[in-house]
Length: 92
Image (cartoon, rainbow, N blue to C red; front, side, top):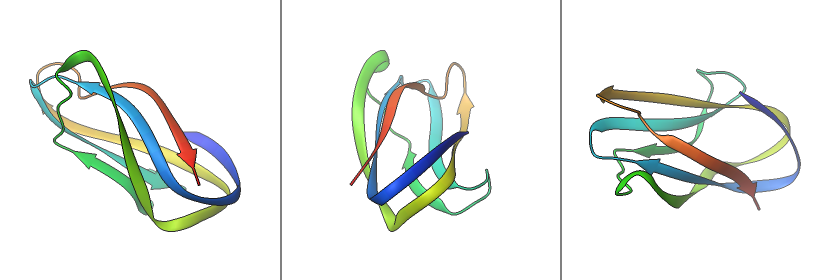
């Protein structure tokens, strides 16, 4: 969980991730709780390896403002890591 103070209108999240081919996985970015509204999602992606990072921009389905808790919910199956996260950023 990351608590963010979104003082201006925010419309996007960028996630820099790496993922090999040995797992099926997804990331849901949710507001306020692990079961809260999904504001960003990425499923079944491959970057070419666990050390090959790619930036994935995702628009929010709604504008998010105020102080909000942000949850990254990871799901997957297979062997190995679901995903490696380098960084994320919230943008206008």
